[in-house]
Structure formats: structure tokens, C-alpha cells
Length: 104
Image (cartoon, rainbow, N blue to C red; front, side, top):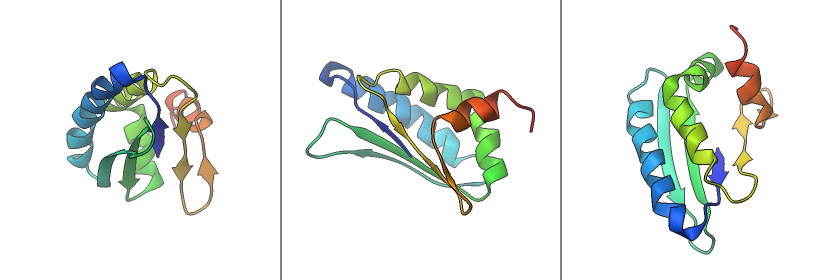
């Protein structure tokens, strides 16, 4: 789950980037669902993916497609909320660096 708070002038740009990630992510083996939500009373946009396995999720995090999601995160005016839930634990932004910098 990624919650991004862009400045108002960048909101549509953010949504457009997330939508370009959504379709290809859904077409990826192991991706169960992918959604983009706009919060009604805030400026935040929430991007949510659900993967069959942790291994498939980590493979996606290493992909060029995921780099587009990381570009979208850069549009946040404050620290984005990034949370990964698994059956075993919840992880945050540190999981991106761990996965992208390893061959596991």
C-alpha cells in the first residue's frame, strides 16, 4: 500500500502515472488485484497491489514497471506512507532498498 500526497497541481499527473502501472501490473502473473483510490476529504492518493506470493511481489519490486511507481512517490509533498503486508510481518520503505539491492 502506498499513500501519496501530491500538491494539487500534480494530482492528475500522479493518478496518470499510477494508472500506467495498474494495467501492466494486473497483467503480471501473480498479481491478484491493483487499485488506485482518491481520498475524498484529503489530497492523498492510495495505490494498492495484492500478490499471490511474497516472491512474486519482490520480483515485481525489482521490475522496471515498479520504477514508475517510485517516480510517482517522488510527487509526494510529504513522506509517503509505504507499507507491505505479508502473513509474517509488515514492512515499510526499507523493503524496497533491500529487495532492489539484492539478488534473492
